[in-house]
Image (cartoon, rainbow over all chains, first blue to last red; front, side, top):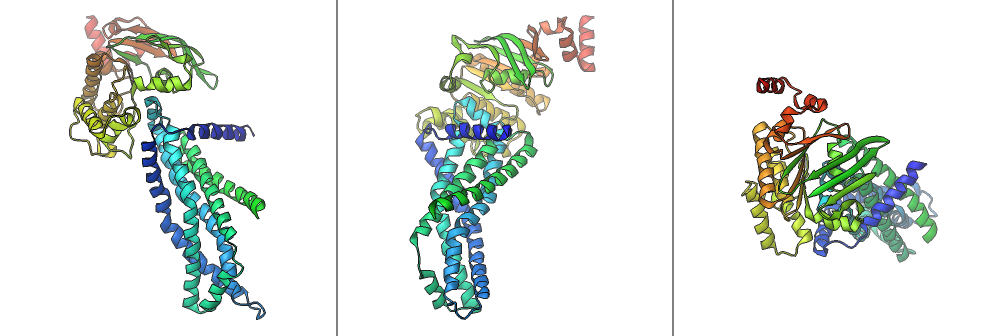
Length: 246
Length: 252
């Protein structure tokens, strides 16, 4: 129990150092765009591939499970849309990102810690937490909702692709379903969820990297811990946000 | 000048520094020697503020470092330069960017001015023309020299070197030692070097402090060390056959 409180306290103290005014805005913006490119643009390929395939699988499974002639086929489109926007494009993509960018962040910062690069910054008088972590947290929190939108669009395209390939339902039924009882609010809700999840991933993984110790084994351990903790928190916050907003 | 008075530091109830008193003069290379685990690095890291001592005072000229708050310490760090054991160069930056890093943060110089200063520092450590290389493309000795160039980029008043010769061959080690000594004398820097390399001790040791199990057991210069009557120091200095034979020959 002591470890849990100690971890929360350390995380809070670190965040207090992270959310300070940057020493120089010019340096911050340079890092911000660099991290945006690395964390968000660099995640587009994996998010795209997974979204297209999951979209296709959801459509296939929905169509195969709707055998009753009393249920209109357009409901395949409704189910695909709702599954993608409500859970897949935010929660599942966030879990995938926790593995991809989370391990990248914690191992990068952890390696800097054990090779004394962070100490070198501190001795120069640089707020290393602010310099290293703030651009990562800011860029991923701001731009990740667009990644969710991309995932949603590509998931729907994946669904359309499998329909054209297999002819399981018609494209017209699918598009009717996509438009049926559409709530734009769900998109905003999902974008907010994604921003919260990406804040969790970047800040938690940075924390575990920043306090890594014990050589390369320690960096590996902290990366694993970072991904486990951030994935668990994503699921907890998914539940909380869903209960709050819906 | 740096003065350490009655410094104590412990980790998990283990006393790592036990009543350390020592003074480091400007323009001189002060060496802290001792076996691995004796507390040298802890002392150095306490001096630069990476560790908080439990008790004691650290004075930088007229400023008591141990009494400063975080903001004051941060500002004071601009007066310090440090060379780390593994050089601690930023992997993602080129040599030039590494040297310009402190300038980016703490000066309003134009890129041209920063580049001029970086070139001057690189030239000073004999690394002219290596600006665009990455740390992974450099040898251990070159990395140390880049570390020194970065440490002196903002003309520090205090320079700290943590085992600057570790992992280097004897010839390169002497080059690094002499470089540290030259820079110290040229810019009248107060330099503190952590080492257990006896070549360094004889080469650049203007003032030497010997730490054993967290205690400062002996202080003197490189000449005094040969005649010391401190048993722990003699065990450390004359640990190998060559050193013992040398001492025997000298005493004859």
